[in-house]
Amino acid sequence: MIRHSITKSVAAALIGLALLSGQAAAQNAFDFSPEQKDRPRTQSNPEAVKAIPADFKFVREGYLTVAIAPFAPPISTYATDAKTVVGADPDYARLVAESLGLQLDLQPIAWADWPLGLTSGKYDAVISNVGVTEARKEKFDFSTYRLGLHGFYVKKDSRIQKIAEPKDVAGLRIITGSGTNQERIILEWDRRNREAGLPPISLQYYDDQAAIWLALASGRADVNFNPNGPQAYEAASKGAIRQVGTVNAGWPLKSDVAIATRKGSGLANALTIATNSLIRDGSYEKFLKRWNLGEEGLPASETNPPGLPQY
Image (cartoon, rainbow, N blue to C red; front, side):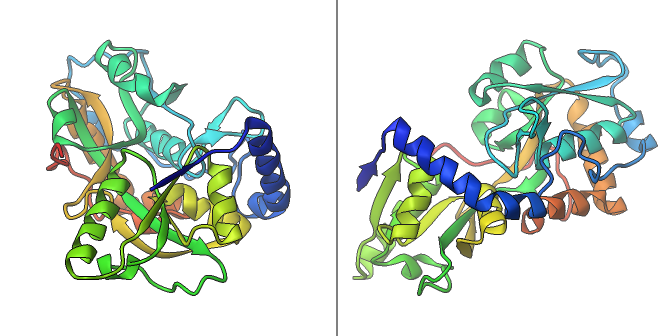
């Protein structure tokens, strides 16, 4: 297992080159303007509004206050004005607020801060790529809205065409994240391959995204196995990589991404109803397709489904 790093100056140069080379394509494929003129909209849903508990006190009257960590496109990032948060999760947050008959108050945060902020009542909800786990369910309620998917991506001219099961990764040089669910999955696949007498994988770890794309482009690594959304964005905006497979983030179980709310607050059921109304009226499909995340759609939202166990 190999960890790679590059200096900040080199990383900055690489990122700058990547942004310049992909700028035109990215602008054509995605809208990062603060105005977001093509953002899908919806109407207030009476059933969802009625499901809001009478004693629930919103942080700000007339608003749904939502915490979000702008960590990477297309899930969430800053617009071209460097202050407006845009992306799939912001689009969804606005749709949910509109379904509840509320305006949206989006609060950018550091991802690690959401549990304390939600518990202390700073936000009504967190919509920031949070996965459902049994440990989190002890402290929070959840309303699911997207599949948790990890993607296998290779450079465009790679000989690799499909990765669907453990044997497909035997002998490959694979980039993944240290201490993550995807690392857990790929290590288990490798263990099964070794037991079957197949060649072992070689894992690589990098400290920044620019180094990952450079490793794929230079042929130093064969595959990047990490969350699907940011890689789908990279593939659609620059065209240098392509997807050859996905696996659920909870493999061998199922893991969904969900809105987190305070445990026992009663808001989760209203949010689940709101999401299911968005699925029915088509605005749910529109926001996913707008950010190239159509394959992460759910057939229906659930309140507090089974979550990932503690490994």
